[in-house]
Length: 471
Image (cartoon, rainbow, N blue to C red):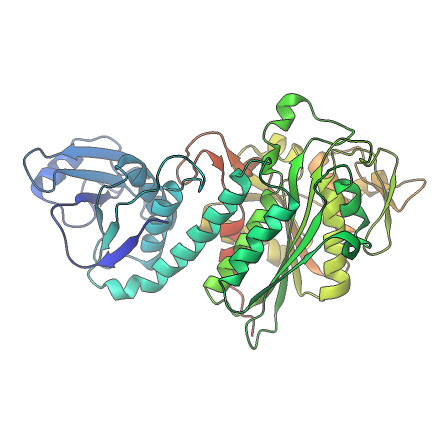
């Protein structure tokens, strides 16, 4: 990522950014009279993410950007940072003047917006940004922790976006596992276990879904165990590195973006790595069941009965509902082997999520009111929206099978039915499930999102994990 540095010294050779609030024409900070006059004459100057460019030929600074921060909350500063970074050249030195007494959330939002709005896929042909961003503050040291939090959050989100944006001609279960091993090796205190082959004999769902591909499945277990941590959180993410739909094959248009079907696994792995970067005092285990759902003579079929890690069985009724099949093994493994205090599951699971809630909002399911509230608040603070939907027991009867413990793709409301299927595998553990297929991808630049993978969930998980007292 490009550099953002705290300082208390202005440099007139840089491009200046003056934050503007929405409460009136008076800019935030100490701009000169020219900037004040322009602000008074510019409609919407303080709207969050609104940008006005003031050229200053033959003077220094040679231009000033008026960046709207709205009401001055963290979201407004994040929007301003994203708008600014898209306006400036890659080699442009940038200085943002933070108002005296600005809250820690202002600095964090600004820095996150700059980094998230400036994201580029690591294998893109365009060179990364080289120019430094300096944030001018009266007391720079006071904001150091907030900048570190923003950096860890942005690093995790960039990593999740990179994993998801990688084409499936490169990305397969073994490749994904290798990326996690390499990242974990750079962080003291992290361990990673990768299972494949005969080590997956009890993972009947994962083996079934991955059985049609020439690239066999993997099961990745990434652990962060800080000394003294007593609270254990397990993060589980769906990791389908490409989804053809299997024998229940998708139409062409439904298949074009299926490189993103491992967005849940990318988010949970990135969040665990971010927790290590922040040295959070919580034990975290991130699990990624990884498979490619392909079409071949060895692909699993509608009507097959699958035996999961816990010994329970599912009748496959749609091979394009494969995500819940691999997640079931991971959730059963967590319940049987890890004894967690809490399980959080993220998955690009259903198109029904987008029908119900649109492109920016994930569906949240949890029987625990306090957990649902805490996750919703963490998502709101991080800039990732979610909406709680019911685990309606009225539909449980739809899960019944004549030849297995349940069917995999029952009739009824799609996102709710998937959540009810997964609920069978949590046991008595406190848990939540986030169906985040729609918000995992952006069709165009939108505030702090860049076109392509959004890394949805990494920010929310880090915010939530940062609120826990693991000791």
